[in-house]
Amino acid sequence: MVEAYILVQTEVGRAADVAREIAGIDGVTQAEDVTGPYDVIVRANADDIDALGRMVVARIQRLEGIARTLTCPIVKI
Image 1: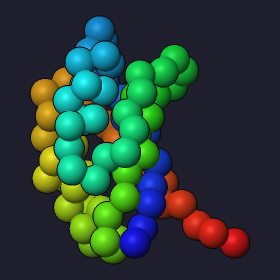
Image 2 (image 1 turned 90 degrees about the horizontal axis):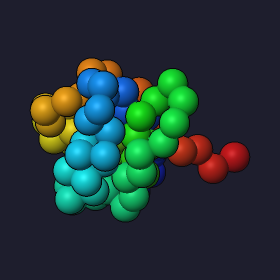
Image 3 (image 1 turned 45 degrees about the vertical axis):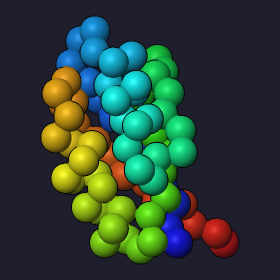
Image 4 (image 1 turned 180 degrees about the vertical axis):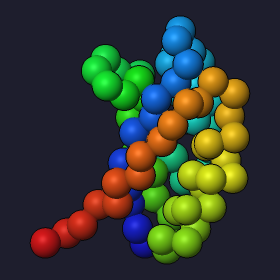
């Protein structure tokens, strides 16, 4: 299993709506609207890196109001 933080920039005024929509996606364990350079921070897990990529590209990035995402896989050192 792979876990990641996904940092999301939204269109102005859309952070709360986007966070609610993302929270309903399978594999998403947490989605919070925040302040700073990113508007929503998501924690998600998937079976492997390819499944994580599919989740981000096919499910998250296609939502209305999302401008950009940055996926940060968690490493256990």
